[in-house]
Amino acid sequence: MRGFQLSLNQTQKLRLQRALEQLESLSSKSNSNASVAVADTIPVNYEDGVLKGHGTLDLDGEVVATLCGVVERVNKLVYIRTLRARYKPETGDIIVGRVTEIAPKRWRLDINFSQDAVLMLSSMNLPDGIQRRRTAVDELNMRSIFEENDIVCAEVRGFQHDGSLHLQARSQKYGKLERGQVLTISPYLVKRRKQHLHYLEEFGVDLILGCNGFIWVGEHVEAKGILIEDQTDKAEQLNTKSSSSTFMSLEEQERTYTSLETRQNICRIANAVRVLANLGFSVTVEVIKETVNLSSSLNLDIHEMLGSEFYVLVAEGEATRKSMFTKKKG
Image (cartoon, rainbow, N blue to C red; front, side):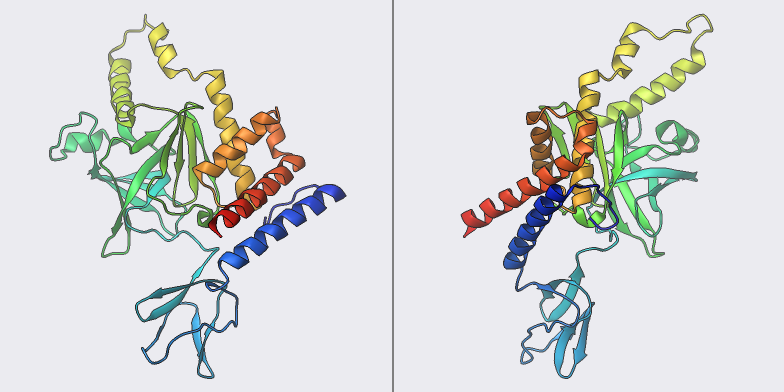
């Protein structure tokens, strides 16, 4: 809850403090051997030889931590992985970014990193879906695919020799995101998992947990590649359309219309993410579902989810869930 102010009465303060203390005690028990603070001694075996990595220091013959975090060991290397840190891209990460610039044969995206990422025209599927060499015509039509301020889902391809971060979007599950909202949270709250793209069938909503801290909540789309084809078709239709046909057809209106229920579900899930992020809890699809179901069971309106009482209830529920999980594990 660093940097977040919440107006609580005395009873709510006591309840929230009790829940957070319970969560802290549970986490310290499970990570007692791995978690270290500044100046803590890290137990190592000097006979095997030790390589001191990031966040460690040799002091009076002992390896001492200079950062707060978790001790990681790779063969002989010992280093500290900080819990609260800026996003560090890794190959294969699923990210959500915003287009900031269209350059020759590439788009530049803001991905919450120290520098913009690059999505090459050759690193994504063309609207016609045919695998072929990119031509000058494709380069001229780049703005019909992505333009400035578009939200895009892509995958980290890797770093180039010049230090730039390159992305790729060759799969149908990647591409432009529409009819939803993007949230920005601290990247350390999103843990790397096998699956980051989720379809919440009971809500009719797509949820993308970007490893870079950008969360997308939007209306479900069967195939994201169809969106690109629809946009190019619409651009051609607008150029050839006569002045007499000024109104959209009913089919086009139905295609672009998002139902009220879906919009409410999007806002409810987005508020659940905001509550979890402000409390400093890890954001996973299971916890998001539990938070949304809790708000529905209490018959809370969407705006009431950001109230003080709901924050306390979510913290108490998370403490109960963690304690039950620890008991089962023990």
